Image 1 (cartoon, helix red, strand yellow):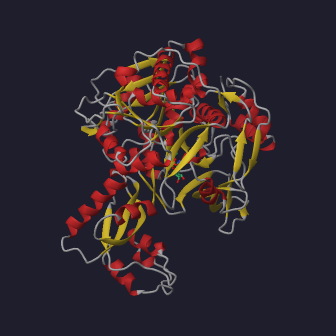
Image 2 (cartoon, rainbow, N blue to C red):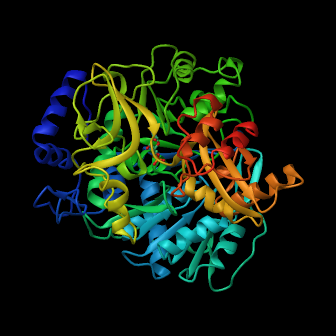
Image 3 (tube, rainbow, N blue to C red):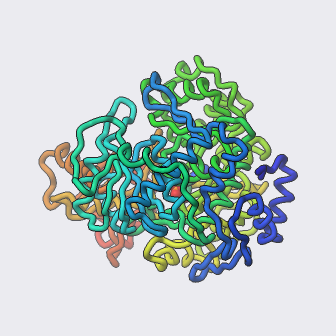
Amino acid sequence: MDLRIKSFEEYQAKYKQSVDQPEQFWSEVADHYQWQSPWGQVLDWNFKEPNVKWFLNAKLNITENCLDRHVETRGDQTAILWESNFPDRDNIRLSYTQLHAEVCRAANALKSMGVKKGDRICLYMPMIPELAISVLACARIGAIHSVVFAGFSAQALADRINDATCNVVITSDGLYRGAKQVGLKSIVDEALQQCDSIEHVLVKKCTGEDIGWSEGRDQWWDDIVPQQSATCAAEVMDSEDPLFILYTSGSTGKPKGVVHTCGGYMVYAGYSFANVFQYEEGDIYWCTADIGWITGHSYIIYGPLLNGATTMMFEGVPTWPDAGRFWQIVEKHKVNQFYTAPTAIRALMSCGNDVVTPYDLSSLKVLGTVGEPINQEAWDWYKQMIGKGTVPIVDTWWQTETGGIMISGLGGHSPQQATFAGYPLPGIQPCLVDTEGNEITENGVEGLLCMKFPWPSILRTTYGDHERCRITYFSHYNDMYFTGDGARRDENGMYRIIGRVDDVINVSGHRFGTAEIENAINESEYVVESAVVGYPHDIKGQGIYAYVIQEKAPDDLEAAKKEIIATVVKEIGPIAKPDKIQFVSGLPKTRSGKIMRRILRKVAEGEPDKLGDTSTLLDPSVVDEIVGGAV
Ligand code: WTA
């Protein structure tokens, strides 16, 4: 299956075709995959309800495209190359034949536990091969996987399990992250005190630490999986059957379960991987994300395996045992495509060049970034220090909701400009609108980034609450999907993403809703009210700044801050810890009671002289106190 576009001219022609004849275009792409039975209609859609269906009534199983097909043609090639947290431990290489067998065993084990098509399975696991195997095992039998990043707290895990009423959790005893060892099973045990739907917990041994055990509910992976048969018929899935749920934060309420379906997601994940990374036969591809996020789903597991690639999975962290770890691994495995986040680039850049120069990075052919806007300095360093000035950078803009990369260069085939994601992939029709929802058609402008036309891997719904999906993404502007991002389009039509325009903060490439963090802070005993905003942070992109009102001003500031941080860690996880906390006696509210976040943002950004009009505030005097007490 070679889906690759091989020049900018070809891109332009394909792009035009994809807009003029989208159904024709996508059915030609979809023809590259194996279907059990073909589609009738290619596309049925409206953005009102919304209702989007691709490849209607076609039948398939994504794992036949990720595995079976390659077993026949490249069975001995490495599918997953796993690099341990510990540099001196052996790699694990799973060939396509071996991965196929492992996936079938895990699928049979799930079946033996009574798992059926449509059941929801929660995966709360380290970056070990069994995580990828479990994802594919669910897909094999038509169970819907819901991967929860193993840095989330017991409370966050319980919320996600309950929202999707999962009946099985797959986890491990613990995990390694650099020098740290973290218990996972203990977090699952705590979460499950609040979850009635879970019948089975499957536990992979990873760290060997002591864990609690619930007889009848808990089972060791190694006791039941290895003995299963290495064949398992792939469940017949409709194109529009759900493949997975992945929770993501928005500007209001609790995280939503974004639902992706089998056919469209498969077509787009495979197509975008082939084109953005320009993967060639025999290459070693490495994406450093965690499978707990969409990047890991689409570009560690599905995209690469659909293309018969060798995809690397790394258990560890970039800075342990030292800040040269990424580059040491690139040299060791002669990595050809390397895909990471700007926050990692900035963190490594700050460690100096001495940890980079010892390594031979000449294997690199494409460098990618994802998750947040990349600043010029980080882009330059990535290009010069890692890419030696010659390796193309693809700045890939996309979202959990889009399922795959939407705006990006295609390897070295696209014009490059630092900090610009560039042009849309074929089939993607972005537009900029003003705050009234009018499309801005000229170039050299800024606006709100929307999509005018569906693509195969657009989210179909938010689990259990379709109305929420409609309101969040399809109600702002008529007949458009609203991304929540602001963007600039330059004179040549290239897009530069500016960042979120809603109440979502992007911390180290992780999305949090301000309301979500505020709700967590408000669980703290003495807190009356809080307001959270983002502010520019050198490494994380954005930091979290919390304004907190307590019943009475705290005597011991440090102790009060610690208590609030501990509450956020308990409610969400360490990744959502506020970087700065300011205690205030009031928040700037309008007469109708709405918090004027603009003021809080300006203070957090260190620009108290740019507050703008404050005359509509109920009590303008709170502003002086907030400015005076800024931290
Ligand atoms: C931001 C991650 C600038 C953006 C795949 C988007 C980016 C949100 C880029 C989605 C990029 C992602 N340049 N900003 N290349 N990629 N973003 O759902 O604000 O975790 O809306 O998906 O990250 O985050 P999510």
